[in-house]
Image (cartoon, rainbow, N blue to C red; front, side, top):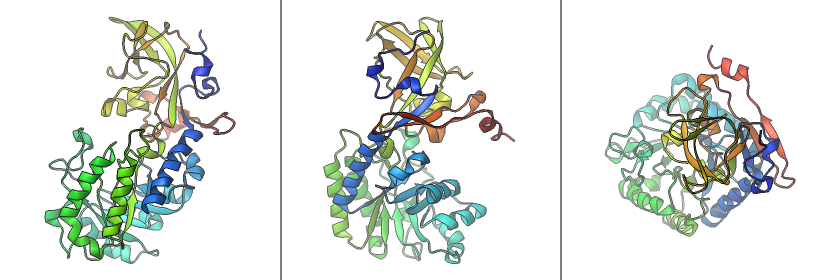
Length: 390
């Protein structure tokens, strides 16, 4: 049985010190992203929130909270997690709230964005009678699509997300402090520039009566080719036009982009029109965006099919026939027991995992930015699976 697929110096940390499978977040890489986000805040005057739907590894929050002003959540449990483990401002948005959920949200939220005028009217009195002051806004739909993947386009025809301009007027906005739009997904600042123009054209007449605007998420700020200068210019110009407004951005992916890994092991190798390596991880259970987006994650030391000498299809442990991660090539044949390391596995992984087939969730680890030692933060077992089901 092999120890690893590649020499240990090919990896940025000791993969043998990790359980398998395990998500591993590198604190040094995380801080690098946070420094970039801090620069955006300082230069632009905007505030950046962590979107918990993308990255909610709260063991890292003592670090992240040194740089960002708070969290944004999609409901009661994320709001509570943000308030109790991150601190700072707590922003909440949901397509619709239930009565019991709103009771919980009002304990923690500083800002609430409602999806429709109907939801605002329904909860307006409850918000007003809450024991703490909560600033409320309306999510609007600029009806300007910039993305290429329909499932991630909130501006698509028939979208349920956000209120269109035809349904907005001064009476609808009475009592509200802010407007919120969220249209981007893994995009550069040129997409924001186009969206912002559409937003101002449709809703600009209402901005003088507001206190804040939330530009939503999907800003890929920490990507190497991201045009930060354009972003800073857009934010500064907007604030110059509306100096009374507080401006928020709420990326989830940009915080943890390229900061984490998924370490896994080869369990078996079978053949069906080519070799297939079965791993102790799963696309559908542990990295669902591989199938939903879809995309092909990178593996340290691996290449495209037939680029290197030995090509394998990599598959997961579940019964789903399509639980296939992709085809990869390696310098030498894989052996049972080899470890593989997928890159960019911090965001939209831990928050989306399932225990389908009773497969255990990957452990969660961190790499110390100074000592480079690996610390296991959390492991999962039978009880985590069992308690979800009855």
